[in-house]
Amino acid sequence: MANTAEVTETAVLNALKQVYDPDLNQDIVTLGFVKNLRICGGAVGFDIELTTPACPMKERLKREANDAVKALPGVDAVTIAMTARTRSRTVTRDDALRGVKNIVAIASGKGGVGKSTATVNIALALAATGARVGILDADVYGPSIPGMLGTTERPSADAGGLAVPPVARGIKVMSVGVLVDPDEATVWRGPIASHILQQFLSGVAWGELDYLLLDLPPGTGDVQLTLTQSVPLNGAVIVTTPQDVALRIARKGLRMFQKLSVPVLGIIENMAGFVCPKCQTVHDIFRKGGGERTARELAVPFLGSIPLDPRMVEGGDSGEPLVVLAPESAGAKAFEAVARNLAAQLSISNTAEQTRRPRELHLHDQTPPRIVWEDGAVTVYDHRVLRLACPCAACQDEMTGQRTVQEADVPPDIKVLDAVPVGRYGLNLVFNDRHATGIYSFDLLRELGELAEPQQR
Image (tube, rainbow, N blue to C red):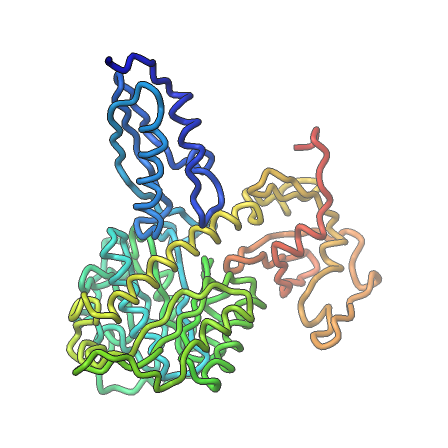
């Protein structure tokens, strides 16, 4: 007998509410993933629009959605198109990177852990999923990204005078390595290096990108601080090796990002075992599991382990990274898994952060000053309270946290003249007493503000 039960949109959506994204911990209907629902008799079709083309749960979600709808009375056929729209970061004013949806710093506490190799292979793994990817080689003293991607092409200029980055293997690249002779030493002091990196960000036509990876130099110096405060980073990844000495230094890099309120998306353990080229046996020459243990201790995600493969060196020298040179190798598969995990953590972080970021800033153009947050909350402020709470070193002892600015030091007519976004985590407030050195984190601003009454919103 023919199945004559009527299929309704409500029934289909209710069925799909049983399908959960385990990373975002919500059903796909509430998350807004279900698009273009179509019903024609017993045939049901719809799209599932994920937050990243590299979603590791893609096939699982498709299978569960198909099974949930297929079980409805009256449904004879289900057609599902899996699509993706990478979630975008909040765009700040005068943002030269407005076409870039996610900016991720790839960092390490020390050199020699394979950070640049990881950056290149992760970028290629993300691009293989259909994502648009770029790499900014922020290691101005030892640029290696162009060589690893096999390019010597110099940037051109567009009609507006912005540098157009060369494209290597589908990846947009900007590096000192494509601007200077390979044998030329870049002997620059910290401020000059920082200025060059700011030019790479504001003077480059990056265009539309899903991911821009910043390959940072090792350590926690001027370059790292400049980029963290100049760029609205979506998060940072720490690359380490399993040895205790590398892990101890990696913790310092991780703590730097946490102090600057940059989400740590996870730890990658590189050189986790050596793959013998003859028998393919993995030998743990640098111990094993240190990166995963450190991630667990510091309560950050573990993105995966990468074995050391001799072809990695060969690929880096020849301009053919491992995921291109040996795509079926254990190392290439490990990079692909890390890329998927990174994309998932970005989606989780972006979703969670939406409620903690400002949607509208009215600290200098409304009375009383106010901020409208992404979760709909509105906080109002007193100018004096903001000035007295300034967290800069001139107003607060850096060692003890004790306030050094007194009420008598603040003029009665104090006003906020401007609020300048700093990175992804706060605002630099400029007052009419010429004080302009305080960086107020969003968490501090939520704490200092008073929740507006409903009629004030």
